[in-house]
Image 1 (cartoon, one colour):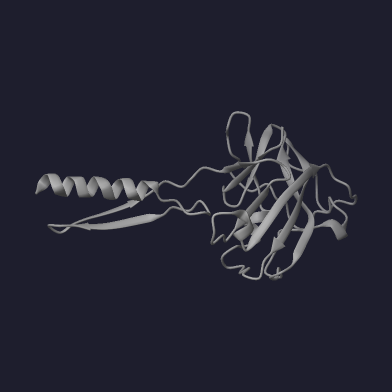
Image 2: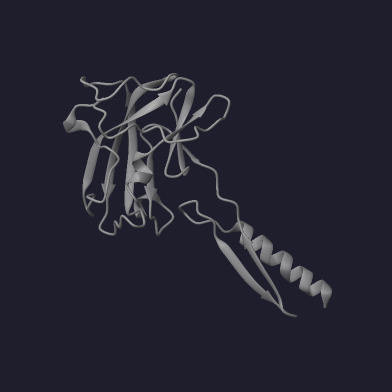
Length: 192
């Protein structure tokens, strides 16, 4: 009987470890074995998905492809500042102003509570040594690195279903950054 119980527990652990959702969030498996033994396992979150500039990413995906996602987006390029008249002082020491250009498409099932725009428009950086920044790279929304017509800003609850949004998000990119990361660590783009 103990051998059967151990085999059942081991099988439950293996099943729980093999399940992972599309969005990278952990999947849970609960199994009740005979003799009042219950096992709950949770897999570790998947690391960031590597993307290249121009690759699509998606959120709130009921299917197994990006085309099934309620929000699809692409980081098309990174550029220096194009505007002038900056509000505020210089960027922090060891950083430079950088524009991240993004194209976003929301589908009919878009729901900002399941796919917040901030997951797309807020960034961190990874250095060549593999160190992730401790905070977000985005400066105050009052910065004016891009012309007003081109600013995506942080995104907000004004995003609607079945729309396209295109624009730039300003970040203070550390000089030693080789990657940018967004989506609460879900995706990373090489920039070197």
